[in-house]
Image 1 (tube, helix red, strand yellow):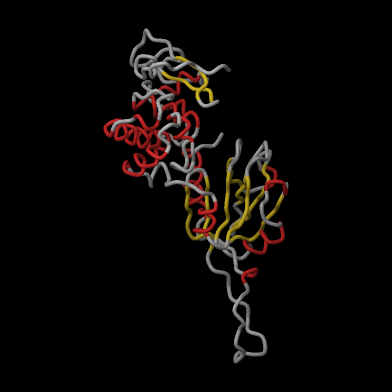
Image 2 (spheres, rainbow, N blue to C red):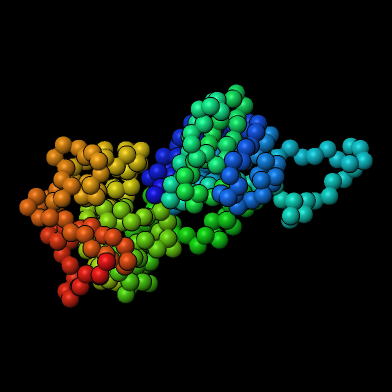
Length: 303
């Protein structure tokens, strides 16, 4: 599932290829992923270009330049009527990648990857494809970027918007919530997914079933630092998780390849200790019993 590091990688990829290049065509190969009518999508994009990109959590927005104003009716002296709310031009293309979304770049139709659902053609012939095998991703438009983000009810971005003070306050408001569940709540901070939270808690040496309100100020600071380190590592690796250092818990998720010295079964800090897998808050969860001691009285959930 594309998480914050994947979406940040997509954003940087599109920045390199698609900014400030006129869009000359839009082809919808499967309208199931659209949240705007196909005709509106084409009308909003063709003839315009992306001026900037913005990622908040797992949401990616590609901001558009203002459309050219229509010629005034009745000659040059005519006064144009202000546009109605319904006619407000789109300010950005919105992308959410669901469970299997991706982006691709290619020039010829015969090179189009399988499962491209929406395709943009840029001046010069480059094509950008929104790829989504399972069709849970979404492509849409917004006329108001701040309002769009507000409607998502997101907390600050986990990578470049989260402060330790906000994290402490947000966890304090959810003091009885399991720590893992609280961190997965996108209202606390936007962009943390299941494996990322496991990794963050391992790096911060905190058990996922701790109650959010039991963390000390030093533990919150440790947690905040771990969020930044884990996301920074993932983004630097362009979301290739097999390239993570051996000391990361993610290798216990038994990826096909891992760096030399990484274990798929035992703690990288305590090699004799097997990594545990149980359910916490209904989510499959990995942790080390030595690095992350369980709270008193904790009983693992049934699978």
